[in-house]
Image 1 (cartoon, rainbow, N blue to C red):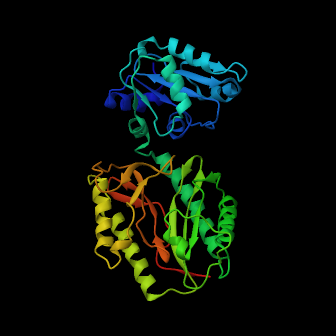
Image 2: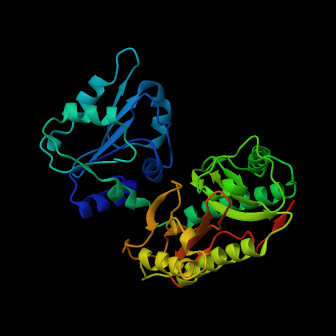
Length: 369
């Protein structure tokens, strides 16, 4: 009897013709075992073969925590004073069926070089392949419980944003606003951050991945772009809203409304059966047909869940068909370098009848401060 939690992994392995996969702590690990460990200098690796029991290489100091996983397989622990080499050697010896594997899948965007080097040492005749997308496919369709966790993370985020906006005033620095946002996120119940927030005003808002400046004081007419999210039980919100400080010019109002129209169009077309390409294409057509076409700089969005950026990628050329349970962002933006940037980002889930927008924070242009 195999561990039922591994059935999605075995299905992904069959679809990709993989002989085995290796996991390290991270989103896929948490999706399977509902538990996570810090990725640190001590390797913790789980190997799941297509046939036979899994094995785990575990730092001894983590054994008490690891015991809560209900892991059904052989565990090889190791201590700092001895090192992990023997544990890897013993794990390989427990998996003789993999000695000549031609397709041993690794989380290539997650696993560190030193972990792969150890696997290469103990499996010298194995062909390792990048199976990151194949392995991560187990997280592609969210369950009702996962969507509920995402909703909670989003609710926390939106309450924190509103509380922060109530304190914004001309003359504050971006760093001061960021500090207020961070305080409010934890006050509202976040148990972590999806990522370091982006709080960018004026010309800084035209940098899609800006950092808050300690010395820039916001002034009348500035765009104020805030991209942020609370994390709740490992699930991440990702929201962007753009405001204007004290006043807004006619040009910037038109600039904003163009992004808003693209955001609304992207959500409106989302349903099962169309492709990720179709969603991005609909959004880009709105931007490209506007007076501000030259200021569009990125795709429409990305998947969201245990990772802030995961599949599906909402971009032209991605012909993956949307399925009920997929969660992704719709976040068109326009950026006039050295002047102004606007992005409006919502988190949506594909449903059997269309889509459900998980974010509720108002999108109409808002003057703050």
